[in-house]
Image (tube, chains in turn purple, yellow):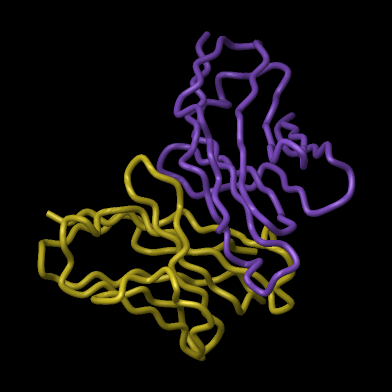
Length: 116
Length: 116
């Protein structure tokens, strides 16, 4: 069975500092990987996704993530954060190449708190 | 082009009442997915529907929960005889007919159900 682990429940960081949000997954099959952002009382917005190809994926709002198959990781990074990046970030995986690829398995989320 | 529309945004029900959550997919989208987010947790898959068909309901609780996506009108998630443990945010997503890999998902803003 697939699972997603986001080890950090909360990451405080000062404005303009770099940040990395960690995500590890377990799966015995090829996967698709995603990062979503959720602002307070809003729905989920897709930041970026890895389906195939280059392991470095660039997304919206200056975020990027690197797929590391050997370490089964998909960490999210941003070189310089803004106050407006304060939100909940969710890593998700689906079983790529399988009929159930529509089903996303989400991690428990990491709350990014950007301080001035 | 309106996104995925969910209503109501907030719903308060007393224990034992029925809750009806509505989801109108994006124009041209014929696949609907429901996810539930319990407090302090990530989203969990509930059900996948196409018009007039339930494709996968493996994440639905066995009792009191049902979902439909009629030929005309929105998709409905119905919870009968609600209990306090049903309090959560319920998100709907939609995707086009060719489905593709997920990330072709568009999420709505959710319905936050509070059972008192």
